[in-house]
Every structure is written in C-alpha cells, then in structure tokens.
Image (tube, rainbow, N blue to C red; front, side):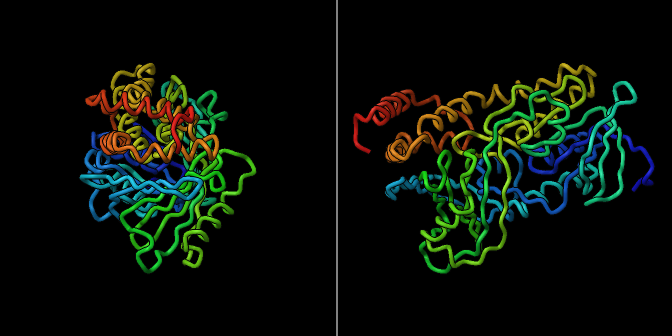
Length: 397
C-alpha cells in the first residue's frame, strides 16, 4: 500500500465493483493494464439473480455460485390465473448477489487489479491527458488520490461519476426495485426450480413482482417508477398471499434501476460509463446482470483502444457496439412494457398470450442465447397476429 499522501498512477480507475465494473477491471488487468477498482464494502444490490446460459458460458461462472437451476417460469395474471412456461432443454441459473459480486471482485484482483474499499468523490485535472481521482478509503476514511488516463464509472443508476461528468445523466429515468430475502419454507408449495412472476397492479402498477428461489432462501421483490407506490406494502401483501409471511426475513434491499440506455456513455475526454450507470437494464424484464457484464467487457475493449490510440472519440465505441448487439431487443422490450403493463386488463391478456407455444419457445430461445431468433419467420408472424388479437380484444384472455 502506498503512503497516504502518495499520488498513485494507473492506466484505468474503475469506480464500482458490481458485475460491470468487476468485469471491466478483470479484463483490463488480465491484458496487462494497471487498474484500480474502487467499491463500497457491504453493498448488496436488490436483484432476482437470474443469469442465462450465455452469461455462464461467456464469463466462466462456476457451478458453485449457482444457488438454483430454474426449469420453468410461472406467469400470474391479475385474476390469479397462471401460465407455466417450461424452459425446455437447459436451465436458467440463479445467483445471490451477496456472494456473486464479491466473487467477481476477487477474480479481478486475481487478474492483477488493485481492489480497494473506497468511495469516489470527484475528478480533477491538473495535467493534460491525466485525470486525478479523489476517493476515501472505507466509510469516512482518509482521502486518497490516484491518477489515470481513463475513469470507468460503473457505480450504479445514480452514478456519482456519471452525474459529475456526463451531460444529462442526472435526468436518467429510473424505477425503484425492492426485495426481501427470506428463509425458504418447508414443503413443496414453492417449487425450487420455478420462478413466479406476478403481473398484478396491486403489486406493481407499471412493472411486476417476483418470487425467485435461491436454494435455501427466496427473493421476494417488486419495482415501480410510480411515486407514492409502497413497495414494502406490496411485498407484505405478496408474502401474505403466498405463505411466505411467516418465514424469517434475512435481509431487505432497495435501489434504483435505469429504464433505458443513456444516449451518451462518455464525456469525450477521459470518462466512460458501464452497467446501470450507462442505463443498460432491459425494459419489461428488468434483467441487468448479463447486460452489465457485457457492458463491462465492451468498456474494457474500448478502454484498450483509447489507451493505445489516445483518441477520445474511440470512447463512443462501447455504446455503439452494445446497441448494435442489443438495441433492437431493448426497443422491442420497451414497446412491450409500454403496451402491456398499463392496466390489469392488458396484463391479463399479456399472461394469456404466454400460453402460446410459439411465444414460449421464441421467448426462451432469445433469453437463453441473448439474440433475436430470426430462423422462424412463420412463428414470428403468428405471434404478431395473436398479439393484435389480444390487444384489440378480438379474443378472450
């Protein structure tokens, strides 16, 4: 450890050690770059914890981190009618962020990154081409400084880096998510291989609520962008209605989530955003872990280009590459949320659509592999006309 008054020098300082920041730090350090990774100790993000097989493959996630393997999803309508959607071949992995995020940070450290419990405060610039990052060690600890050519802000939806450096970040639209981790009840009522998703206005007026198994525990959560809606009351009602009210509550967590990717992820100089700080949480589903880790990897690749060329225009590559891969999916999911999540009548019809085998197969194919399925145009056409029929009430839900 350097003396407290020393000004350390790094190639990159990464602020935030969640999936995006830890991935960016690990990739850069493995490539020989000197990296400082700052993260606040004790922070656990509220998250259902679902990760698709594509993530497990691409980012080499060990089986020991999977607390459950999901084989089906149960979609619950406002009327309490439900539709089960079997995964088919394979499974969706479940992780607990209490253990998943520290593993990723430890892996970054093993790759060569300097990992510290630190709180970002500000960036100053005294030397051309070099940013000075001011941060505090631990909670209320002494101030330290580090110099770097690039700062990667991966510090969440309310990113201090983003708010200070990226125009418009303070206006990022957000939904607030809240969940409670409870002890798994005895008995077979709650299937340990099934995720339950509740499309009910009383539990979320504009999103959904969930019960996701985590092995010996269960994540019970919801989210909403509507001011004044009580997330805690919704979870209390959901637990009471599903027999989870008597279960021990292990921890409670809440945090804002972005609703759409920002139009700009860099400041055109020496700052680049990744993960929630860049707005990469999927609309409609709220899925964020895969997109955060991909965003972290793209940020690392972009950082390497910037460090080699010195061309600040290259910082725009991270967003361009991400949107080329997933922009269309995000647009479709955003439209789906706007169309179907507006009222309980529409939610009822949305759940009814999920009974369709074409919908189920294409949904799981796209989720598991993280790409739109273009090989089945007839199925896409059938789904389109069925959606119209439900939307305009040509069929009963």
